[in-house]
Image (tube, rainbow, N blue to C red; front, side):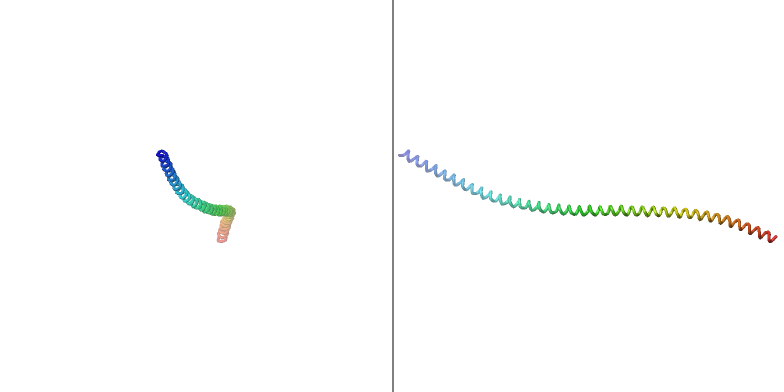
Length: 137
């Protein structure tokens, strides 16, 4: 019976080892589940934060797009206004150029008339001088 008793002791020791191994595995599994659960919560929080950040960035991007569109509209208006003002300035410049040409032609005409009147005045003065001289003689 000694062998039988040794077998029973060996079987009990094996069972104890298996129970200890099983307990250790269960404890390790519980720690794994606990740590896994914590990591899952942390990951969910990080995902939530990431989604919030993405939403915030999308909002900022939309705002930037609106600002850029407004700036493009402003630039378009400025360009159109500038083009209109340039056209108006060119028209005024052309009108002033024509007026200068008209005034230059008028000045030439007046100079010509002045020259003609000066010639007539000299001729009249000469005639008057001749007449005076004749009258005195």
